[in-house]
Length: 171
Image 1 (tube, one colour):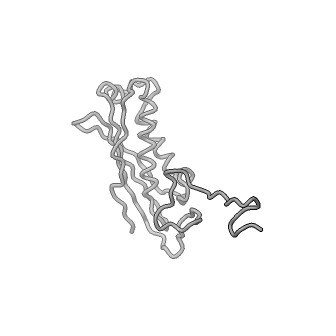
Image 2: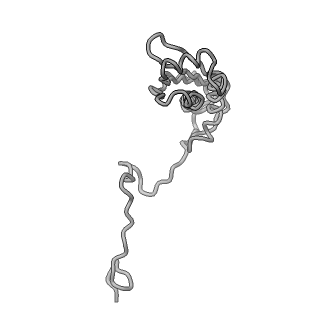
Image 3: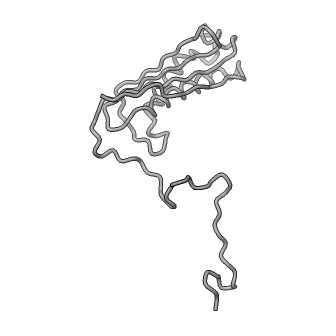
C-alpha cells in the first residue's frame, strides 16, 4: 500500500514549480485566466486620449529627417501613417484590448529648440463604452519605431523615451 500523497513506488510526485521570475501576482486568484474587462452597464460616451513620446537622434540624423534626405523616404509622413494604422489595429496587437472603431486619430511631430529629438503626439477619439488611451499610446510607439527603423542605417544610438498618456476625457 502506498502512503497518502505517494506514487506507486512510494515517491512523492514532483511539485510543479514556476520558473524564477514567474511568481503569481499578489492577490491574483490561482488559476484565473486572463479576460477582457466587461463593458456592460457603461454608457457610450465621446472619449479622447492624448499620448506623447519622443525619439532622440544625433544632430546629423535630425538634419537629414528635417531635410527629407533619409534613403528610405519621407520619415515623418511614413511614421504618421504607421501611427494611425497602429491605433486602428490596437485591439489586434494587445491581448484583452477591445477593438474600437476610431472616429479620429492624428499623429503630429514637433522639433524642440533644445535637444535633438522629435516629439510625437497622438490624439485618438471614439464614441464607445471604453477608453481610447491604448490607441493613442500605440500610435506614439509605432510612429517612434517607424522613425527608428527608417533612420537606423545612419544613427545607431537613437532612443525612444518618455512615452506617456497626457490626458483622457469623456463626455
